[in-house]
Length: 424
Ligand code: ATP
Ligand code: MN
Ligand code: MN
Image (cartoon, rainbow, N blue to C red):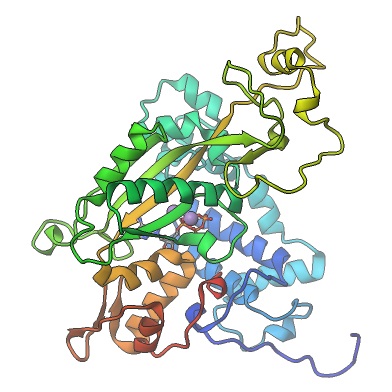
């Protein structure tokens, strides 16, 4: 590869929604660095800078191979002076001092820890830091009043900051499906968000719910939530009513990137299931080893051998019970930690009327940058306004209907990009 020939520059279109961005990323070192700077800007309420770094990272993410020479970047869109400097430092020195010092900075670390609490944004975290609160323990000891979301977020902090797997997303999907068909037969649920884009992990699971007969979906969310609550699946929920109609003459319009569907931000209690054995101690603390935990869905059959651990069924029942309940007479070193048999999972539910379903699906599939770029493309290049509800053509002064994502891309004059290639 050390050919003394002209370096060939990469070439990509300027809007992320014109590009196919799969999960395969040949420039993770560079995109991680730029994403960290984006995150730092967002946490510091500098959204403009945040978006600039996000766009730069997205361009590198879409490249067909690794960047090894600055000359390859000539003519690429969205790479500002600042991003180019960071890239250059990493290519030349292996690291960017700005990125490294940001990563080490106490302020950044505290902001990350505190905004890692569900329900805590950068403003709140910043206020706490100014009051001397930098850690979860300091927050707990501070007597700060927390709202319901923040209380739940603090209580389930570790679970909610541990990435979810596809198997866990599927298990949640089965529960949501059961809830939805129980309260409204014929209603349909669709996985959206990162898992629809083929991501293998996620910070939450997102679902869109609709019914093929327009209007039948009205009031659906509260019924779904009641069902879930009655079955003990919810640790927290906040349901927001549909404000689409009300807001027409109502007070403040929500920000452009927020939609007005009936939605529920929730925390589910997902019961884990053991891979091994059928005997369960009656004290509820079932599985001492989280590595053996698996989920009620999809992993029932097949070889479940773990070379290091004997199957639980081979351990005498008494011993099983002692291991899990800790009646071990204080041999702390040899006793496996007792883990709860469930985990907390963030779940977002959205209900859409069928007439808006395609827009809602497109809007809730992401990525966030892809969505932002779609709206920017619509506005700047096509004089159209795109939301999760509709597409309005300002030139023709009318709404453009669509029953599929493909139709929306066509209205926008864009090549169709499937979900797995929207990972900008
Ligand atoms: P992750 O794995 O981190 O969950 P994700 O891509 O699924 O990744 P989410 O934050 O769950 O990220 O968002 C999924 C989609 O829902 C995104 O396209 C985002 O634009 C959209 N979305 C999230 N919150 C809102 C909101 N309040 N209003 C409208 N759309 C939203
Ligand atoms: Mn998500
Ligand atoms: Mn979400």
